[in-house]
Length: 69
Image (cartoon, rainbow, N blue to C red; front, side, top):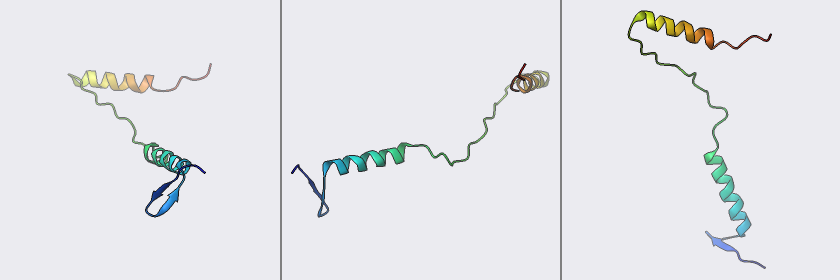
């Protein structure tokens, strides 16, 4: 047959090691789909209170989805 590896007294075929390696990389690298997502918060650095109020109203007005026409 083909080659095999002895690891800790057990015999493993090369394809078994490849599958185990790919599975481990996929588990470690994949993001957690069940993690809670934090909402994005914009830090507004305005020079005056009027400017800050204008920016907040502008963002609130333009962040709403457009209605279907």
